[in-house]
Length: 91
Image (tube, rainbow, N blue to C red; front, side, top):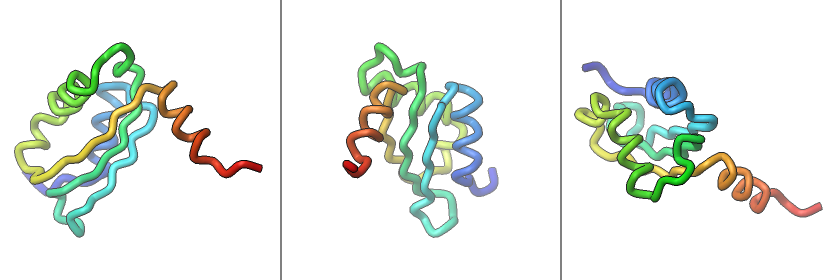
């Protein structure tokens, strides 16, 4: 398998778990072995953190075989809206 890119991961998450937001950062200087991700999907609704992570790990099972480190934060769309609104500067 060739090097994994952040765009590859984003495309797969958007397609397979209907991610409405997938911010994937390659932290490995482009070699595709270490990623940091923020993933928002309606499929996370009603799921505990471990179940959300399992869903992502299962979706990226082939890619995980060559990725050295994958850190993720998973949110429902509602949680993501609250996070975005709380981080916006007050006017």
